[in-house]
Length: 94
Image (cartoon, rainbow, N blue to C red):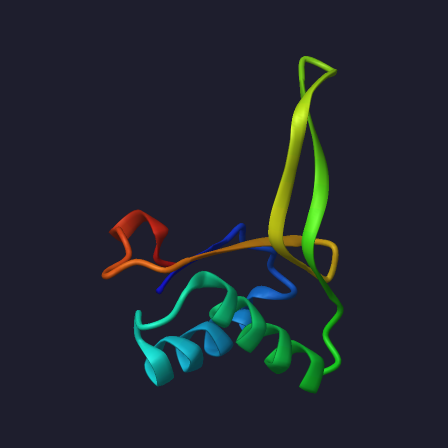
């Protein structure tokens, strides 16, 4: 499973162990949605706010250029993307 999150100092210490727990439990066996759902279960059990498949408007030089759907946004500060890969590229590991 590949997994990347833009780091946010206040929430990252909570997310890193959850990511490691899911990776250790299942490895790379399932589609992305399974890992997203597992993370949602973990976050809900800890009462951490999140949204899945959250639409974001993308702008370039102040002009709209498209829309992006983040797999998950945690605490309105961290965007998480889940990737089902045989092995995650080193730059994707956090």
